[in-house]
Image 1 (cartoon, rainbow, N blue to C red):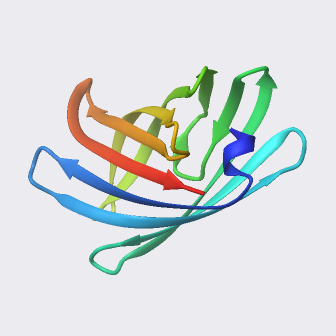
Image 2 (spheres, rainbow, N blue to C red):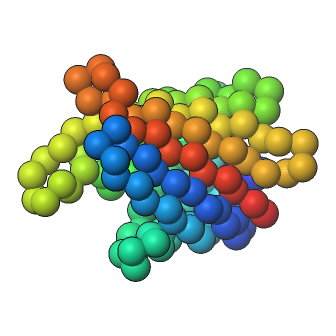
Length: 139
């Protein structure tokens, strides 16, 4: 992970929910690796003009394994990298009109031969799929 995300990366993505909500976005990322932890600052710009910033901190705990945290993630996540694929799952508290809305993300990131990193995530609530995201990262 640190090999791909250290430095500047950009991405385009989309969010699609079962209730018809659709949001496209771009992300500018800045990653810093200190030999043990990857700090990844994500600056989002949504198609409606909303902006958001999230910061992941991934600590390498073993070869091909990281423990990750972010300000809106409940607890942490375990990232496992196998070959060109990283998988992780985590709980997020979304601010839905100031009412807590806890959902679970199931992310799968796959490095393509052309250098793109494709992240597909399924988002669930009470174990049922409620949304999907698709993000394409480029260096």
